[in-house]
Image 1 (cartoon, one colour):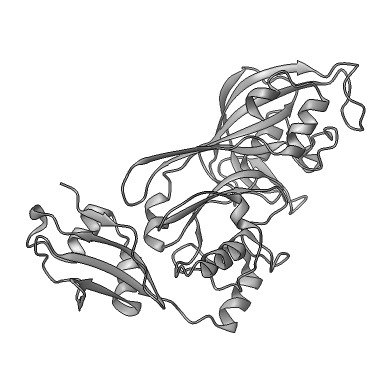
Image 2 (spheres, helix red, strand yellow):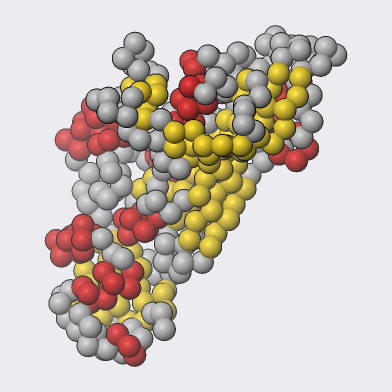
Amino acid sequence: MMAEVNQSAKQVGAQEVFSFTVPPEAEGVTIYDYLRRQYGVSRGLLRRLRTGGQVLVDGSPTRLKTKLAAGSIVRLVLFQKAETGKRDKEIREMGPAADNGELGLAFPATEGPLTEWVVYEDSHLLVVNKPAGVVVHPTRGYATGTLVQMAAAYLAAAGDAGHIHPVHRLDRPTSGLIVLAKDPHSHHRLAGKLHRTYLAVVEGAPQPAEGLIEGAVARDPMLPTRRAVVAGGSAGGRASATRYRTMCTWVVPRDAESGDGLGRGRLLSVLEVQPLTGRTHQIRTHLAASGHPLAGDVLYGGAPLGTLERPALHAWKLAFPHPITGAELRFSVPCPPDLAIALFQSRCPILAHIC
């Protein structure tokens, strides 16, 4: 029997990770052992509970080595950390690598239209349909106006004490679904559990029509803003794999909508793409290396596509088990207007099914 999880509680000045009612079979087990075994709570979070939080049993603070009693209600609470100028300086200098998801975010909140983008929300996570052009995480070049800062402002306005922990990232020009955890335990539980499916419009017709692209990805030594497929043993190269399936292939007709960059007579394909690893620019790099770069991805050799001003890549579908309940969650969002217009201009035959 699973412990009953309470997802509704909040505490002023603190962040409740979750709470549960102790089942009969957990009688006599220490809180530490039960949290590790039953919920997979990370050792890092347990250390934080010791130094910057509380474990409450029936409302009273207790220690992680306390043995459980059936029927008791256990709550895990983390106190919010003071944000420091030093921490902000580290983030600006180091970029996304300065926060690994376990520490919470120390950026100033930035108001934005996040309410319009939220696809799903509960006490532990947010699923957001990110527009193209929005940066996920503050970096040296984008100190404000990022998705996590908008999410922080969104939570603050709702009186939610959670901190934002991006479970994965999307490139700035990529649109579509992204998951933001509200607590470090949910972030830890979701790591490696996401099944992501993208829509990609590529040059040409991949052969075979369905397959797996493998190749280590590293920073391109000739152009630092790009990534490249390198030999597996090369310094900095990280093993990467991308699965793809061709949904349709067509030739842009001569009577296509007028507009620069359509390339009448041009061969294009729509692919369903699933990254099996999560490297920076992985899909863009692998498709370019296979000879079929994304349409619109000038950085990786793709030609412009009508009025589209970015790579033709959209995070279309997302599935994962809920970090607390284990229930399977599935989401999908149609491609946004800029991509839909470009596909209409080029006469994509499956436009109605994907947009």
